[in-house]
Image 1 (cartoon, one colour):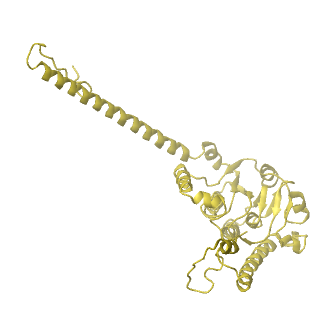
Image 2 (image 1 turned 135 degrees about the vertical axis):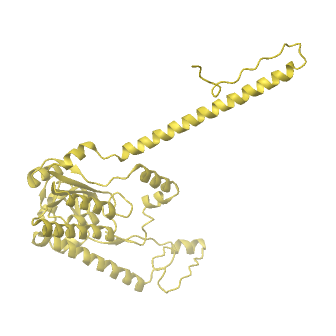
Image 3 (image 1 turned 180 degrees about the vertical axis):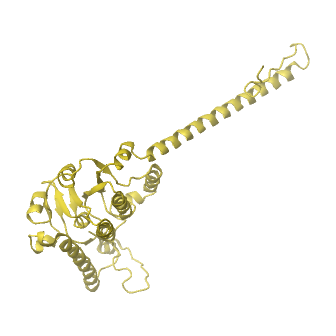
Length: 337
């Protein structure tokens, strides 16, 4: 059987004798046909290469989003669930409430989980996000005890930083373990802003801010902050601070050994935090899993970003959002733990 390769090959045309009057026309036609054939070959190879690249990228996405096979095998065995709380606790971040809560729910739903470790390395962040996580820990523990008739232990393990909003989350756990060099505490609230009023006056720049509501521009960095406005903002911060203190007292109870300095915004080394009752002892995640939970098998439940989400976030950073966040300008005027 003879295959027809005409799709891949240029049809051969025989040139007449050079002495023939149509020889030049035939030569031009043949050159044109060969040029067109060459263009078609290039287009085909370009299409093949693009298709190959697309399939390669799709393969990367599939592999990147496949669950860890080693973790899958451990899910059907008794194990300790590990959830990372890493970085700023703000929306859309790795330590956002949505991600941490989703991981907590997955851990509480698996009957093979014998205990949960929240490994915290965070300087804090949004009071709302930290509060969501704190409340969800409490709710899930109560629900589990009601349904299963027993407690599922939740431990917080501090790494380098367990401060502010990170500590707010930690006090929702049954116990807190730290390294002796961890920085723990910073129980307070802050609002970041700045003032350009005097610089604008010296440069002769006039600020034109139109508002409906006398205090609508209360934290505008280019407008003066009156004493009345300052007192109002301080009152908001004090109220949020009391909410933070109430959560710490509820979570730590009689274990707290310090006075009002605990709630002044100061932070301490891990060993000093143990003395003050802010933490229960020294220990790492593996030690807590082995000695307190009773199983050294650790499965990470942290919700990771997928490849598309990471790309979208980095693309947004190129447009300036990432720069704003890195400089802390995106959160100006928002309370932070």
